Length: 259
Image 1 (cartoon, rainbow, N blue to C red):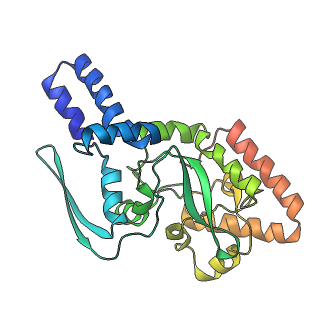
Image 2 (cartoon, rainbow, N blue to C red):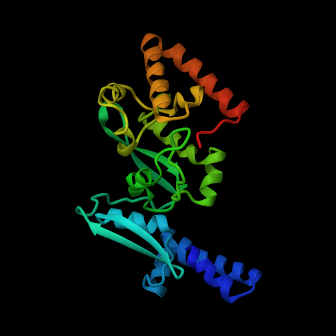
Image 3 (cartoon, rainbow, N blue to C red):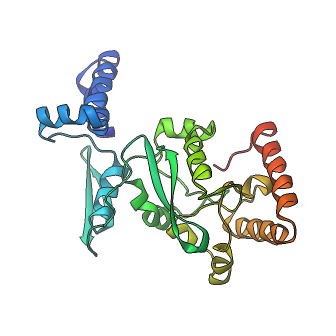
């Protein structure tokens, strides 16, 4: 995508280049993702000359069973070295629409699908291991330099807009209001076996203990969750009440965020 923008800037004055790029963005990136419009788009273009973000391109490779070995930027082109390591994913619903369903580990280890507004490029969910291997985690337990997040996605996250669809999970009974965060398998596997076994005995929550304690790394996050579960076992109602107001104070009053 960034190379397309550079081409416009190279060919035209800045104002015209930005206008043309905006039109290009709407037609080649937005139109293919809107159910009604995408039929018109593919009828005209046959899928040729589509614009993909780096995250979507790599995500599609991993979705198809490839492993990325190296990336190179040469002459305004991105070259990828990859090898086939497994069969394509059996997931028939990769993230593509505005509201996405993310597979997470729920109570008893059963998979649940958490609803959110999409803040990442399509197919980003297949890059979790790749991003972790490349960048590890930053303070707060999120991935460092996560190129999967879109510019507007960062705004949605700061304003908590992306979390609103999770109330669907609350209504469905997959999650409760306060509880340990519903984790992806890749992140869940970072926990030790003993705590994983304990963790799946509880229903995950929309507001995790993270926002009450504001831990800064994976060790502190694990300790935060362990402390919450210890207190929850003794008095569930009192614990969730206290953690709700601690989280409310950090989020609303102190404007704390997880990333």
